[in-house]
Amino acid sequence: MAKFSTGLRNGMLTNVGFLEALNGGVLKIFSAQGVPASADAAETGVLLMTLTAGGDGTTGLTFDPPVAGVLSKSPSQVWMTPSVDTAGTCAYFRFVAKNDDGTASDTAPRVQGTVGAIGADMNLTNTTVTAGTPWTLNYFH
Image (cartoon, rainbow, N blue to C red; front, side):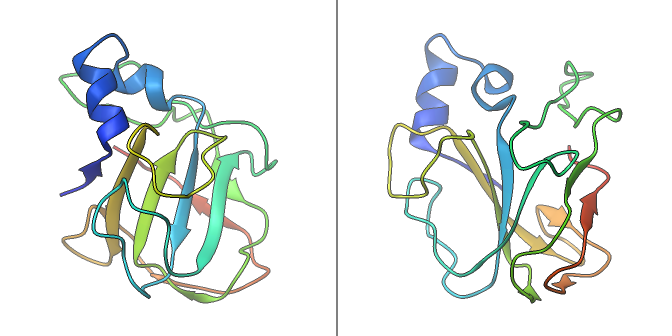
């Protein structure tokens, strides 16, 4: 099950909803070396790629309004990178605010989850990525 950071949980319990906290963020995908124990911990492993809207490196990712309690990526927005940074096997992801520096934080809104072929928080057809190739994520719920 995906892990919510303390900052995200605290915001949801006070005045900032999940959608508000993470809409416009980025999705980072990392290799398997040392998956952090929590979303509050510093990033570990190798950053394989960062997905932005249209792969432009700056435009944040957006969600559609929730339907039946499910929040999904906007189907009209392409979540991608034009070039995978480093070859490797995808092991975990973090959805973070654009300005998240990846250090340990109990205030930053983050969602962290596993990446795999079956039974992970994010299931991919192929978890191996090649440096220099474009990569697109079609679905995120």
